[in-house]
Length: 366
Length: 97
Image 1 (tube, chains in turn purple, orange):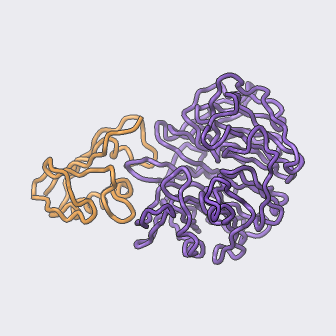
Image 2 (cartoon, chains in turn cyan, red; image 1 turned 120 degrees about the horizontal axis):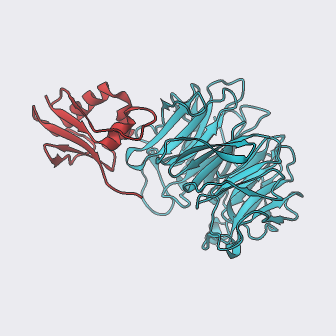
Image 3 (cartoon, rainbow over the protein chains, first blue to last red; image 1 turned 120 degrees about the vertical axis):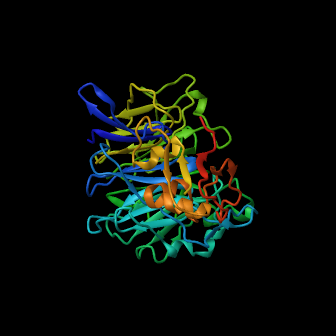
């Protein structure tokens, strides 16, 4: 099991380590700064941290030594003249980087390859460890992109970049709001998946694959044709590499939420952290729970042992639920700064003895 | 030549990972317009460019440059003149929590 975690928060990047006494904070980088995402590269052990400094823009940092020192890397930049539309009637305007919302490594045969999903909707590729970036034109130039729109933000954004471990040229991305897309040729051409539906949209748009709002998309690494999405409208799953999606109506105690974790070898097992519903974004009944299915969504266990069950209003963002390579250990962090871990697939949870700033993202260090 | 004063909140990002306490920084550079002065500052501190200007080269929305106490109005072109001996302050909006 992985004994280290990176927790990206509104006020710093916290490294957690598990020792004899349990989990604790082992290091802090960028204290008081807004760290929106972090990523430990399994190829060289380096850490990447994305910061959104507000006034001073979006930054990417790299640490070769587990957070002891940091170097500047380039943030993806939109080429001059590119525009972004919002599909809600506002006129298109100049595209500039608003947020790095996804980071993924290339495979072992592609040293230096990184993928970055961003707001306002660009996917970027680097072949030098983030020293330079290139906009992936094959997706950006799709005419449908001009119909993407923001979900919870002014701009559409790519929050999920999933690389198929069987083939480095197979890349899948999910967009809020713009659906789930697959490229089988390294990003040159793309197809959008079908089958999701957004019941809150006008009737003409409900089943439009480009109008969908997947909140996060995760794959089963050992069975990468199997993917799960926590969508604005519920839970969806795919068994054909994100070509088609089917609704999972049994999600309990609700279908609304942001995060999903998929077991590394069993595609039928996935975890969610539900909230009541779109217009009531708090845990059902003020009780923080994790839901788990072991049978591909036919049924769900509602797991609450060790989680606060009185006046708990923690929301878990889309990148803030993580699973390690064994599939037994999970961790998540909340908007009110709680972090919980489990070593038994969620049967019981332990709180981190710390009150962290609001948590944006949690990831295990391989 | 103009003197450029960089506020502490910006000066702290002159290193990749800021320390807990950084003072304001000032430097004397050549240049007759805001753009020329900023380019001269960025030549001295290359990493500062992305903090002060966006990817279009415009002054960031919440960053302000004062020339002798007057805020630069044209944040895109930055063509306003900077007199010799002027003091240029780089500063940011105050907000957040």
